[in-house]
Structures are given as structure tokens and as C-alpha cells.
Length: 249
Length: 201
Image (cartoon, rainbow over all chains, first blue to last red; front, side):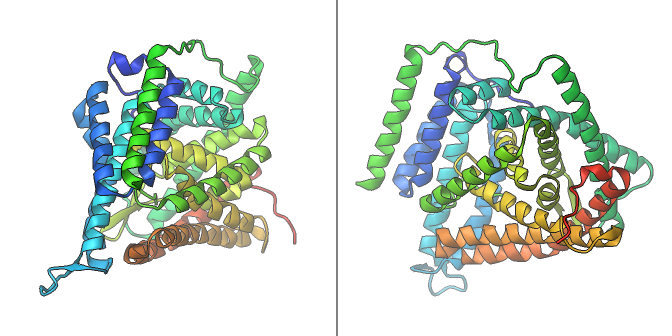
């Protein structure tokens, strides 16, 4: 099952202006993505973990969400030291390891984890409708936001719908395997999903137009930026600058 | 097929983000509000279908569906894929914020290019099926090639990883092609108005 957003955070983080949170997430991600020194990246990870504590996120789901990226990191830990070349460790053994490859795998692991933890605290803690409104006020094209909100809504509908189609195929004895019959069946299932989806889209569009929809969802919550938002953004900017200084001097 | 956070170099990330933003802007211009609802539905289907894992030999893989999306939406595939990937980042942490641009480019550019294939070429039901096969297969192949390209552009040390990505995707090209052909043929029979009209020459 897909879990809807937002994830729970502390009241502190929850009270921050959504726009400030979006800006902070972008600023931090972009800065950290440009770093490559292990000490700067280590510091970035510490900042992320501190924000995790500040946001009081439940630890287990955070780790679960990081599993995917760390699975890929594991792949890099295996392949990079063997294939990267350059200076070698254990030169005389049967499996010489590339020092550059190890350094790179370490850097990538630190970087990906610190960015994804930071995003969880500040971005995933926003309901999607609020995120849409924040993006709208940050001058992201209106159509794109509308598309985002519509898609988000439909994801849950189609997830249920596809499970239903899959279940009825199973009831009729469908057993997926490595054969053309299975792939053809998947083709039909997704085709059927699309047919139903389009029918639904048309009906929803008519219903929305009938109610005077003109292309924008209106947000009822007011954004009231305050002193704490200013302080928060200043702190994130200072951290980003500090990381940059550590990297480039 | 997502570029993971933290892997690529700054210049590659930025270059890809600029190109992706251009593609999204072009795509948005081609979508009026009526087609927007359709694009939303399709990007949600793209999202859900990419969660469906099917067995391939001992392992499993999932559908990309970008060829199909390109066939149904044209340039509109750019914003549709952009939105689906943004949601994957938010809901599952596939990729991240800074890799969003490059991931959009990897998926959407092949979608637009191969989607154009479905709109021309041999006609008739069997012709359509053949075109759809190449559309799905080539979209996966091109995406894998782009993925390998951005890895190599970032650092020469990724050569081994890039080769692995391409090799792993070769059998998937065939499966995706077969799947796309079946799916398009199904739509052609059940609801032909969903498919774009064929352009003669």
C-alpha cells in the first residue's frame, strides 16, 4: 500500500511556513549535492540527523525509507572498489581494491543519506495540498501544480483498482511467470486500467467544471510567515554557506 | 531506473535539470486544461504500473511505461513524467530533489522520441502492434543508454556500473516492447479514440 503524506513531525517543524520548508529543502539538497569532500559530507549528515531529532520523526519508518537508496549504495560499494582503478589497496591479494572507488562509495553514501533525511523532515512533513499551495506562491507554473495534485489523487485510486484487477486475474488462475502469456496478461491489465482511468478522468472533469472549477485548487489555510521562519531560513543558509566554505577552501 | 541521490557530478545534474525544465515547459504548453486531466490520469497510471513487479527468470523487474506514455501524450509526457517522479521522490524516496531533473530527462526524452514512432509508419492493426513494440522497446533502450551516458559523463570510474545498467536492461527491452504492443493493441480494440491518430508521412 502507498502511504499518503504527510508524515508526523514535531510541532516545531510543523509550525514552520511551508514555503520556508520548501526553500530550505532545495537549498540544502543542492548544496550537499555539490559537495564531495568526506569531511563536509560527514558534517552534512550530522546536520540531517540533528534535524531528524529536532523533527522527532519515528526512526523505523525513516530507516525503511532509506533502504532503497542504501541498497543502491551497497551495489556501489561492491562495484566501485573493483572497477574504479587508480591507487590500489591490497595490491598483492587476489582482489585489489581501488582507493578512489572506496572514497567515492563513501562520499555517495554520506551524500544520499543526508539529503534524503533532510527531505523527510522538512518536505515529507507537508500535506500535498499545502505543498502545492507553497509551490504556487513560489511561482511554479500553475498547470504543473494542478497536474501534481491530480496525479497524487489518482495514484491511490489506481493502486486500489490495479490490485482489484490483479486479484480477479489470480482468481481466474493467473500465475505470473517468465513467459509471453504473463507479459500479455500484464499488457491487458494495464490497458484495462487505462480505459477505466480515462473514463474516470472524463467524469471527474465534467463534475469539476460543473462546480465552476477554473484550474486552481484554493487553499483555505493562510500562510503566516513569522520570526521563526526567518531564523530557520537564516540558519539553513548559514549551514549551506558553512558547508560550501569547508568544501572549497 | 532512477539515478540515485548523490551519484552524479554538479555540472551533469545542472545541465540535465535545465534540459528537463525546457522539456516540461514545452510539454505544459501543449496541455490545455482538458488534456491536463488526461495527463494526470496517465502519470498516475505510470506511477502505479511502475510498482508492478513481474518475474523475469529468477529475479523480477518492473515496467517503465515511458514509451506508452510518449505515444499517448507526445510532449505532454515531460510534465506527466516529471510529476510522477516528483511523487515517487516524496512517497518512496526514489531518487531525490537534485536528481529530479536528470531522472525526468532519462525517462521523458526517450518517451517523446519513441512516442512519435507510433504516430507514423505501417498502418493496420498488425502495423500498429509492430510500431508499439518498437516504441516500448526503444524507449527502455534509450533510457538505459541515457542513464549510462550521465554516469560516464559524471565520472570515468562509473564505466563498469554503466555497462551493467545497459546489460541488465537488454532483456527488459524485449519484455517492455511486447507489453506495449499488447497494451496498445488492446486500447485500439477497446477504445481507439485514446490513441493518437496516425500521421501519414
